[in-house]
Amino acid sequence: MGILGNARADRILDHFAMDPTTSTRRAGLELGICHQTVFNTLKADGQHPYHYCRVQEVLPNDHFARIEFCNWFGNQCGVDPNFPEKILWTDEANFTRMGIFNQHNSHVWAHENPYATRVDSYQYEFQVNVWAGIWNNVSS
Image (cartoon, rainbow, N blue to C red; front, side, top):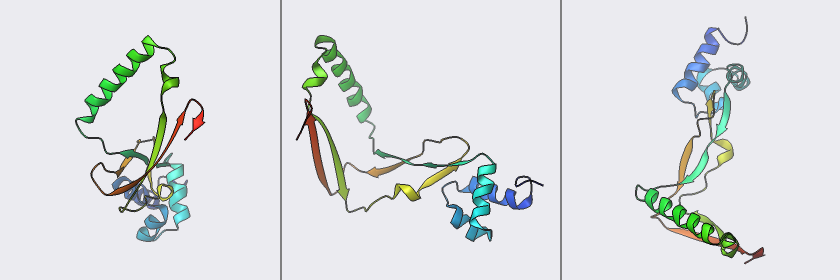
């Protein structure tokens, strides 16, 4: 009999159906099964460990501001095709007292990518911001 279709495989698949974010090691401990067997069962079932996509919290009013900006930007590019070259492009990193989210150890087991997200930054909390920018191929 293959890895799927037996009671142990059913227990493993049921466990991950209830909590797809658990690790194979934790599931193995809770089920009393070797974590490698848990991993092999999930793989044989066609599941993959998808990582979370880190996103910033989006508030209800943000949608309209984003649409307005996109319309404005499109109009500016229509008037001046070189408009994007005149922009100071920036990026930033926020360090908060909430700690660090270790994306490597967090995943969701599923047959297809669920595009799971995790809010990891908030607009209203204490934070230190590090900023960098590039303009016209010159770093600042």
